[in-house]
Image 1 (cartoon, rainbow over the protein chains, first blue to last red):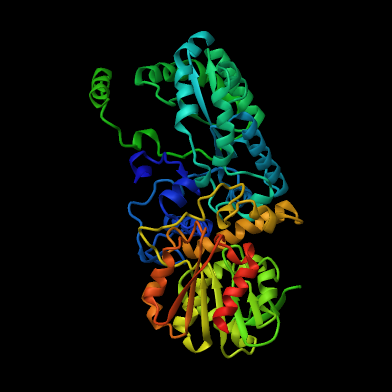
Image 2: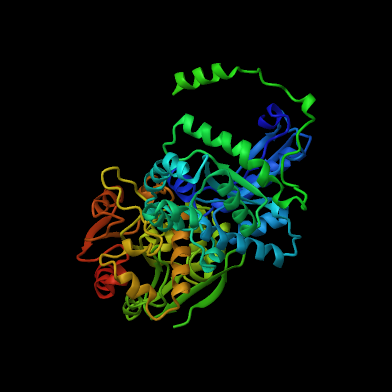
Length: 308
Length: 257
């Protein structure tokens, strides 16, 4: 449905899910989590590709009539797999040629450990290197100067790191959530890793938070420089930009976002120009897409003010 | 003692098990942590009984069998019947602890002719709103089975000492994973509806310091059983046979004699 409404611009995220959400909050059994995930993946791929009605007699999903409607515009929509660092996920991405996305709040160093593991595994499996097969999520904020960035955004970053990400250790890693290979590879879950990394983040100075890659912040030039370091250092072609974090108010977020769009985005886009991006959506021609009603800026602002 | 192997059932599933001693056959069904070899409690029991202690599918060397086993009562009960068949044992005393006590109760309910006397120690499988017990699967990932013991350091002493640290920790997590398959997210296995079918004289024992199965579960099991006595293991935690092997063996023997 989203692919239809957007004219074929859906990126389909296939996360296994975090232990505290899936296992503890939603009651999904960790012993069968991965086989259920893989079966769900197979079911969705079949539903996207099979033009006929079919029966699915799986172990976790049983459906006498699978009849997908509306069908997606893209065939199929690109699949991105947000991974927290389990080795099977790397193989899964290699096998299906999916994008591996590392979604992390725990800084550049852990990101580097993960992405290096990912690229090493891709090489072992004989996959041709293309930076667009990887994505990295990063919190970014832009101001006119470095000093203004600290003044505007530090308090919201602190709010985020010291308040928004607390995870009870007992809910970080249900038995079975990590596979044996992942345990043996010494990879903690993203969340367990975060618990300790976060304690660190909360006690860092603003400059240290930037230097250690917990956050990208500063003037447009500083932000470009930091983004280039991340993109080249981790060899990622896609950066998922988290432009809002913590208790940042609407107008502050808009200010940062606009500066990002005007002064940063055009400069960082061409970093990996020599590679072809096979993992972005392939939408319909613009003239064929549905067009949303134009909303004057004044009206948006009022709507936001009323809602907020 | 090395574990032996035998093929059981129509699928020829390989079972790793220990067997020693002489006397009446005694089937021991282990707790969430699997088997730590032919542990002292089993050695003690083997002085009086022909003790058979198999790894359940999913635990220890049978870790890869987990996907084939349905989490309901039928697969595991048929499997345990297959184990007795393969070993040429018509009927046995059945002693189960923790999740093994649930499996023992299912065997006694579904195949009553196989079970002479039944011992259920710290049995999981009933859910009591007023005494839910601690969640064995919501523990610190660094030492997830500490909650199984009255004295948390027993985890290091009984499961880790003298072993490769990574191997022991992986085994610990995989054993808990196997238990989770049957008990997630609430350890209510539906056994309550079948307890009335059990004919074997039964001993229900609870450990005084069990954080996972509070002592209040003892009377709840007893009330649902036709012929059950209650006992208590003072000072022990959930994995009582590991922590207090002598008291555990004595309790079992006193009842079976």
